[in-house]
Structures are given as structure tokens and as C-alpha cells.
Length: 443
Image (cartoon, rainbow, N blue to C red; front, top):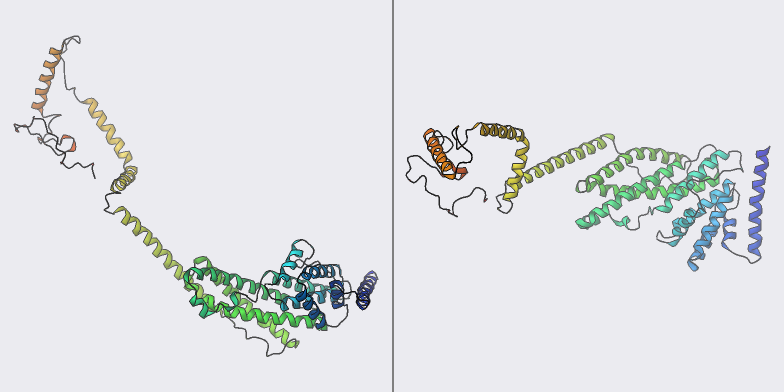
């Protein structure tokens, strides 16, 4: 009983608003609120074309009326609880969006009132209380509102990218090609999302048999034709340049193509359902290109193989560049390279060097002193005694071939390549400094 009372109250309220708008218009008052109310009357007739043309004429005369219409539309759609009024509001908005250019200020004003909370299309809070099948109509209105909300944010007609086809893409420079390719991928993602929204608008229950719903579905379906025709043209351009883009873009393009294979089957079923209801002529429906699964697998295998080869070549190139850098004969960087190699080598043989050093220290500690004193040597003796002891020690060492000469009678003299032999008469002469001698530390 309460539900029935609510239905009657909603119907009376909507009809009263329409009568008031007609009377006010006849009395000489004419503003956008009255036009919107009259255009969205709660009857079973579709939206009349004269209201659309009237609004377009007002917009052409006064562009500032965009804001007034956006406020009137948000008020009318937000307050109604009748599915007929709500559906006609959405159809009115849909037709205005199709009639006005994409770069028009009309979209900006709608986005402004949406961002400020005056209009909510997604999520849509509408609920019908004027019919017995309120659930079916409520679901259809909300799906339609989500479609229009997404259409506000993207120009799916492709104002700039609509004319970027195969021939034009070849003429684009290499620097701009990546930017155009990114925009194409973004556009294809938006078009695919719009096609999903269109298929979600499929009414259920008794809603498809209503004449107002069928008239609204004609506009929705025809927009899907435009979306799919754009998608077919642009996906060909993307696939032809798939091997010339970065890894991230190729993965995005492959995901779009993979989703297109699933979406094509769903779109065929949706178009077949529309044909059974005779919503559009059979000649209007585009031919949907079904993508076989084997083609998806082949493209995936090709991309994986291509990027594996690219990774291997890049890694080999980096290794060869490192090797060539280390082996470069340039004299300016030679010291730095030797220090790097010695530093790397020191990490591997550090422990061995420490052990060797400790062994040398022990041997050095065990060696006999160069000057040996007698047991009765007095530390307070003069320099004459010290000199005599050093001469005796030197003679003893030369006879034993220790310290000054190795067993093979050759001494390397601190690594400079000079030798001192016992039989050499000039062996104990002082070596004259020669600056032209090769020094191993001056590389």
C-alpha cells in the first residue's frame, strides 16, 4: 500500500511541474529551467527534437548559458524519482554532447558541476518509485549515467588522433612517433572502456519492451558503432608499429589486443540481441572482426622472443664495452686502470699477502744482527771500537754470501735491475743516477 501511494505521489508531482512549466511559458516566461522540465515530461513518448534544437539555438546565441543549463540539468536529474524523467534527462544530455563539438565549453561546465558535487553520474544515486518494475529501470538508468559520465572525460571521436592513420603515422618523425603512439594507446583504452559501458547498458526484465527505453537504446547503439569503427582503424596502426616502441608500450598494446579478442565475442552477442529487437537496421551494424586465440598466442610468443634477444644483445654489448674500457691503451687512464686491477686482485690474495708478510717478519727477527759485539763489549766504548766491529762483520758476511749476495751471486738491488758480483772489480762503486733508465712506476 505504501509503495502504491509513493508511486501516485511521484506521478502527480512530475505532472504538476510540467503543467506549471507550460503555463509559465505561455505567460511569456522562458528560461532554461522551464525548457528542461518540458523536455523531460513523465510520459511514454520519446524526447522531442524541438527541445534539443531550441537549446542548441540558445547556446549559439549565448555561450554563457552553458552554466545555467548544467545547473538546471543537475537539479532536474537529482530530484526526480521517476524513471521516465531521469531517462529523458540522460537522452537530452546525450544528444547535446553529440551535437556540440568536443572542444566546446559545454563539457567543461558539466565537469565543473560534477566536481563540485552538484551532479553525480558515477556513482548514480537514482532510484525509481514510479513503476512496479523499479529494479529493472533503476539498473538501466544507472548504467546509462555511467556511460555518459565516462564520455564526458574522453573525446572518443578522436579530435586530433582521428586522422592519424597508417599513411600519416609513417610521415611522423621518430621523436614525435613515441608521443603519438602513447596517445593512441590511451585512446584505445578509453574506447574499449566505452564499449564495455555500452554493453552494460543492455536492459533486463520488462525494460527492453518499453518504447522510451528502445528509443534511448538507439542512440547508445549508434555510438557503439562509432567507437568500434575507430578502434578497428587505430589497432591496425598500433600493430604495425609494435616492434618500434618501448617494452612498456608493447606490453600495453598486447593487453589491448588481447582484450579486443574477448570483447569482440561479447560485442557480437550484444549486436545480435539488438538485431532481434529491431533497434537499428541490419545494414547499420559494423562487421565485428573476431580474433582467434592462436593469433594471440603467436603474437605473445613473438614479443617474448623479440625482447629476450634484445636483452641478450644489450647484456653482451655492456660486457664488451666494459672489457674494451679495461683494455684500452690510452695513457691518460692507465694509472687508474692499474690501480683498479690491483685493488680487485688485492681482494682475492689479501689473506695470502698477510701470511707472507708475517713469515718475513719472523725471519727478519731470527736473522743475526749486522754488527755483533763480543761478550766483554762495553756499551760506553768510543767510536773506534764500533767502527772496528762493523768492518769485521762486513768481511764475515761477504765470506758467507748472506744479506748482500744470494747463493747464485746475484742481487737485484731493490728491483731496479742492477747486479753486483763478487768478481766484479767495480761492484762496490757508487751508481750514478741516470734519469733515462726505465722506471716501472712511471707508466
